[in-house]
Length: 209
Ligand code: CDP
Image (tube, rainbow, N blue to C red; front, side, top):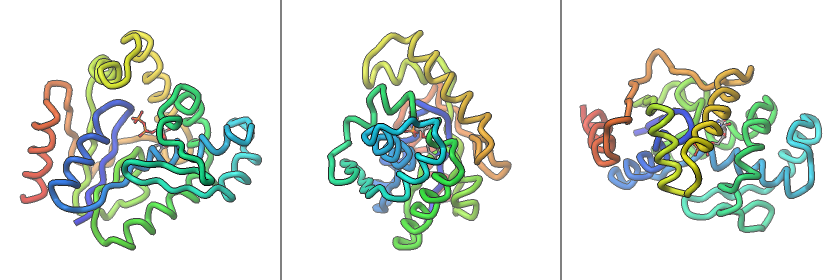
């Protein structure tokens, strides 16, 4: 079974996707980590993330190894750095580049073809990458709750984090290439008042249903 999950920043998609994959005994792919890894590679080579031509050139050359617990870019362990502030503020600019997207989308589809099953999570999985997935979900929560979850996970000030994820949402929703949007075929799960366990249980019920 192939499960596609989309949703905005900090909605808890990664945690939920990973847990659902574990429960089902299938692999899990965090496509956001792929965009973050590409952004890390761009910054490591001192390329301006807004310089589309240079970014495309670099992305075609990067060696990305995005695993569940470890991300390696050109042989360098980038697991922590891809979650840091430098990558976080540059990633939506790199992800807005259509050619970067086509390189990464191809890798994502190949990942699914090689396995035949899995949970894939991101922004355009239900709409562009895997529109024929067996189960399509849009996992969201109110901006405040998303900011509070991020702060509980990695610290910071709730107001500042809320402003930063609102800005990333805005960029992800308004870009031309594969903007974040809700597929008419996706089931929307608002997790604002749900625990992770509740969300996982809800999804597993839908898998059985
Ligand atoms: O974990 P968080 O919700 O903060 O974001 P992420 O899933 O790590 O994704 C980071 C960024 O990558 C997003 O803000 C998008 O700009 C981009 N992204 C994308 O464009 N398409 C995807 N399928 C996944 C992520």
